[in-house]
Length: 481
Ligand SMILES: Nc1ncnc2c1ncn2[C@@H]1O[C@H](COP(=O)(O)OP(=O)(O)OP(=O)(O)O)[C@@H](O)[C@H]1O
Image 1 (spheres, rainbow, N blue to C red):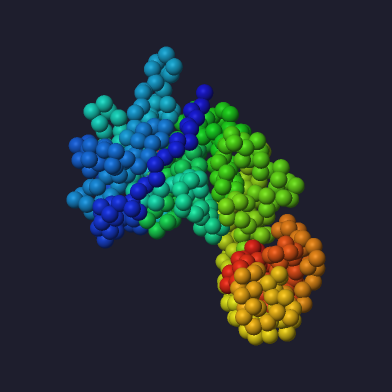
Image 2 (cartoon, rainbow, N blue to C red):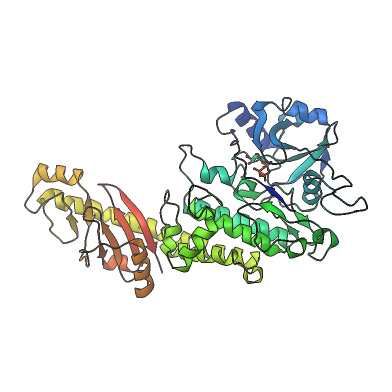
């Protein structure tokens, strides 16, 4: 039987608001190890860890996992802030395990396993690295790892606090950082298979970079190695590869599957398994949508679609490939990294162009405001107001109407008489190519027009939503510069 862990709801690291922790962190940064790693793994006295965590006090508590609790520790006179993971482990008895066994993972605790793997695999930027370890009076191991002050990706995605969830750009950045971390593991020699990739094991460092942690279930070795072959399947429900049913089924592609689930979770904001929905599993919900081409249906409703809606198509198709039921058909992590890099380039390009277009539009907007306010009517065909400034309204009345109502720019607009949804817009872009026109959603009439302005045309097809005066909300942008 494999071991399955549950996704414990964890406390968010509170460093942001605790002044003492902030002071400690500043001091720690000066002498920081956070991009440099100490050359040696240290063995700490248990009493030092007790003192460093104020006796494992609730004030130092960071979160709870299935093996134990995690505490913030102030070590080396305040020069080192670390996270200490306490663990409890019962050695298997002879009745449920062979006494002659020399190497399977049942013989070592997840903590011992984590210490062994993290002392061999280190990455200053991508992993939550090991600093040291200790042993308590009951021979339980304590793991001392780098402190990640900004909580986990799970917290960021699913926290119900008032903090807005991360937008598309940080989500994509986190996805790429995790993909690179997993690729680092898979390409080390011998390779490491993490086996527990999930959002609560992705932690945010002080520069808000996503790092992969929790190596309690990781296996280091080639798939044909005895240790790997004799270790029963393990992972977290919802992220666990359905092809991984027996020790011999394990491959790096199991991590690819879990990463695919994580990608779907990041795009949709849905938990890997959420009984509030039907079907509860994110993969069973998302894959049929992707197969039907309803890519935008995957987007987290709290953040809407990315500026370039075709990005969603690429990301969802990548996620669907990662979670394919045939392990061999899934991409390698290397390919996943390359694909995410490409998507990031497109998002960055579209953001840069959008910024430039927004500047131009706002400039044009100012000019247009002049026109409307002065004459109270459309003069140059570049601006129309919807419901705000009626033809023939003038002066102060016009200005008030203008301020109080939604206004849209509509230059030689076409096709304004019907609604166009984002899916349709994506199809439009795919059909007509980029650079054909600029789509403008007429807020009040809920219809869609296309802005064809020579000065903007070479920026491609831009879809933006014009809200109340002074507010232009981007809903999509597709660009070839
Ligand atoms: N290095 C760290 N720095 C800061 N907080 C941490 C660190 N490691 C863990 N935590 C916090 O402690 C929580 C528990 O971590 P832990 O790795 O024990 O369990 P988990 O990954 O949440 O669940 P499971 O044990 O089921 O995999 C994390 O969710 C996180 O909030």
